[in-house]
Amino acid sequence: MPYGRYFEEFRVGEVIKHWPGRTITEADDTWFSLLTMNQQPLHIDAHYTEKYTQHGQRLVNGTLVFAIGAGMTVADISGRAIANLDYEKITHDAPTFHGDTLYSETTVLGKKASSKGDRGVVYVETRVINQRGELVMTFRRHVLIPKKNHPTLGEGKLPF
Image (cartoon, rainbow, N blue to C red):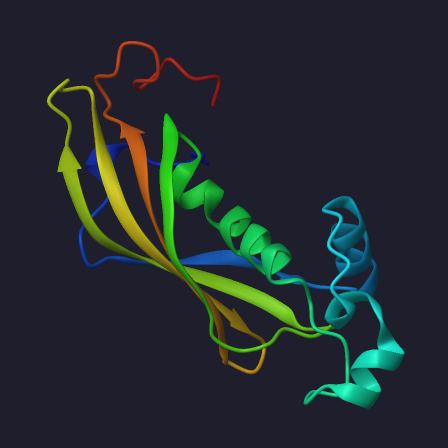
């Protein structure tokens, strides 16, 4: 099974559904918040969220949702990438709670070959959706992808 794609293999308008999904546990969220030093009570204080917030429960750290949503795309989008050039327009569309399962899908919005001739930039939008079909996050990025003729990353030159 190939890991990632070459520039030539992306089609503008294509929708790529990433699999498998990922269920977010309380431990995932707690450790991520601790590792990133995020002490926002929405993520770590059950009493506070039950008593003082609109949802009455802790929310999953949004940067964890982003990290998992982006991670789900690697095998299909950036597995062969030279670089992720940017992330833009990240929106938190709905809350994610402990026990939610996330899925993601990506639409290829555009692509442009580089003047170097052995690579190009692919512009994509990824949507992260929970098990109820609710959109929880959207983000866009530009990814620098090798062409099949790339001198070090081209076809037959990777270990997979």
